[in-house]
Length: 283
Image (cartoon, rainbow, N blue to C red; front, side, top):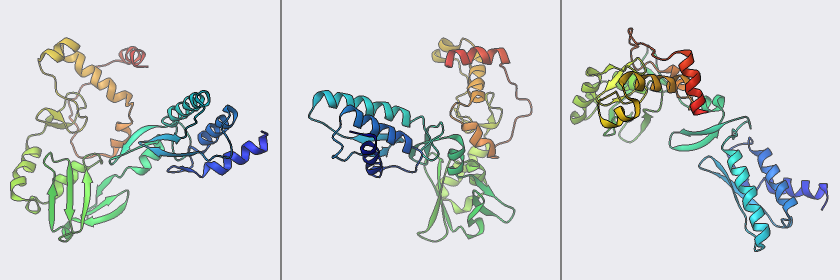
């Protein structure tokens, strides 16, 4: 086994991995190299793919010692893959786009996430591309929890929108109520008439027992809250620090959102020292 043989084995099997882009190519090359060094028969193919945002490799050897080595190698590169952007190979994390899990850096995550906009001509756009005009909508349907919306331009053709897109609730508020089924019109109207200020994120987005902007629950005097936080200010402070740290990059994405009004009297309860101590606990 020489360097040229290993390189040939690597390049020949690289194409056997069904992945979304080229960001994992170095990971796959290193995995194949370790396979060769471990004693894998290089006349045999190696196959793999991306599944649920993770690199999976499918091999088996009847040699139990070799099989144990291969399992360790596969586990190592699966763990590395969920920290590596599938597109560019830079540091990434597991993210959800629509209903799909994928591993991306922040920049490529933001590129792939749609942002809803409504211009002064009533064009509904995603990432600056017009998808339809409000005047052309003939019917609107909405899921029971109001988090998914379908806008029809004829009897069968529709465009789908989700609460996971910035400005979703701005869009929902803009669509004429008359386009929705009569049994849903009051529910939609009630939502926007009964929004309250969220003490955590500072937006007028609290509806019933959940903030539509930051998705936190408001404080209440139940046993769970008292046992874990003691008093209301401690709960608000910790939730605000989570938002500020933005570990899942939610705030970076939703900076485009204009669905809710900012509360003028909102207070930040944590200090820089509080944040330093909290980060020590997390990281």
